[in-house]
Length: 214
Image (cartoon, rainbow, N blue to C red; front, side, top):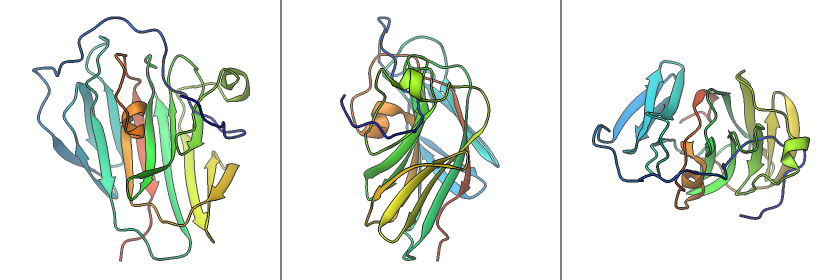
């Protein structure tokens, strides 16, 4: 996967080496369900990943450390704002890093605006626009992945969207639409691509703010 790298942006992603394993759905996985965080209602697809909800956070992690292609995906939707300026902010904290990245994607009408994530292959924490991805230089230019909370923000105003990490602006680009959803899950799934046989990274997400609803 080739894409331009967003300067000074951090994320981690897809692992390379992978063991052989079945990607068939697990029999102990529950049917699709839903859950709430403080300000959002989430729906969860069936998968081998464990998804848990607390009032102020969502956690996603593999049920076992066996490679799979069967990942859960949590989605939260809202009505797009008509205001000229908007802001979406969330905190991320990683646990055990697997061989494939877990991330948070921000969307508008099904199109990926940007995402943040991490995995053990690059071992860095990053934020990107669209389907931009890690390059080998990411290991030297991006912050190391750790188990602390980090604030990610996307801010829209005057036809532009900017991305921020821990209060530092990382870049901006043109965007004529407003966001309407967040997804949390394996990175290929966020991209709308077939996932590889890998071990998913553990991730906690606290959604701080989304555009106010009418």
